[in-house]
Length: 264
Image (cartoon, rainbow, N blue to C red; front, side, top):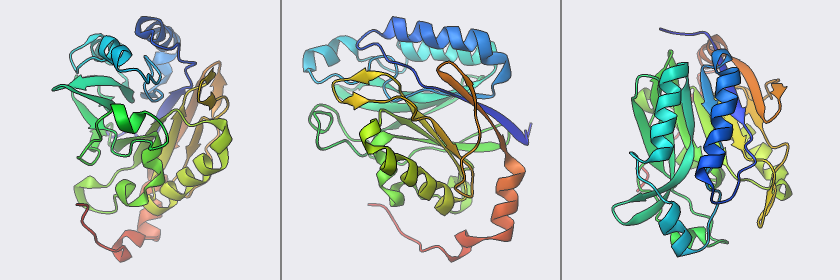
């Protein structure tokens, strides 16, 4: 089924550090209350744990794709017929990853290990960088991809201009602090314009040792203009038009003039 208007919710979770069950409970509460209004729900980066800088904490918290976090999200996606995206703390084959996901109601999913680890923090020392480009998953006629936080600064990594890799909707799961608001907003606008796609910035709220995060949820349309959202506590809801994207690409087919490149 192709859905011209897509309802997307962004949950600016005030993440309770190292407490997956408490954070999942908040997500479940919002889905129970607003799930019938949503087609897609986007969660922040590392939404069940926030960042940990101690290897012993990572060992205690990290899960795989069959663990409690992803299992709970699969059940929510199925029960409420919504797609869910975000990132979580994963342990795969002995390595720790900041692992993005998009899960569909039918159980199908795509996973993506954050490529660009923040070199000014312990993330680049404790986590393993991903090697594969974000996958594109189709849902309700919309092609979706997900990147994680710092990835947003790297336009070549985010570029999808043609063929089966092109997306209509780029989800950005993030813990991006208020101190870098200007960069956060303008990088999303740039990614929206150059890919002629909707960009959804799903940032956390609250405060941790790295900074403050409130009021950082944004949705930008394929022209780079901000989409108005309804506010429901921590949840923002926007309605997106697929026809607008199709029409923009038809009238301004800039992808035809784009440079070709290969990421090594």
